[in-house]
Length: 321
Image (tube, rainbow, N blue to C red):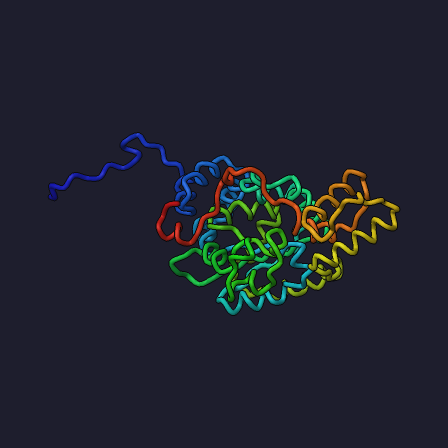
């Protein structure tokens, strides 16, 4: 008989296991996110449903990611280039869904980041979700050191266009600006679980999980949905000068008198044009407001960090933020 003392089990020591905490601890290197997501309804809904369906939540969240093509991606006709980029980077689309969005979906999705968003950014985002429905892709990738979500987010490129590099998805799709970045993906498996419930209600989520489990390529579904979305949202210019010209035309037709001191060659002057029109309750072309505003209005407020800051591939590999 061995003299080595046996390792006491948690149950023997009176320690109560917390399966959700254990799941989250393996799904993100951020201890702050683990603590926060324990009480997050969206995370709880996804994990509970995956368990009921007999699907390993940790394995699903590690082996899959989500890719949101926002309304600006629809206007930019970016679906087909995105699908080609995914295939070239060894990602397979195993689900494609048209999802209606509104201001509440936007706030749920970026709830832990928008504490630093300016009022102007939130206003532009609310206009953007009114442009069209969105396309949400469920993406599978090869097994490796990184979960699929971490690998996809790293390869997608930065929100800041100055930090994007050739080969990244956002670089390929066009270097617009901070707000009009076309695509979004969850940082890590914990975010995959949360965003799954943000986009889909329980009934639709069950179908999404089942379809993803087959592993079948759904790129053709994505193209079909894209064509429907393109019919809803016409292609528009992302050029600042085009947006300004359209807004000036709108205001001229409304007999709106611009403040005489406005310098429309400057960011400050263009911002003041938007503030003046909003204060007067003028009806303006939403897309032109979004484009011009994205160049000239402040996107963040204060100097405090996000409630939950982004998680990088480096932090995932090191195991802690």
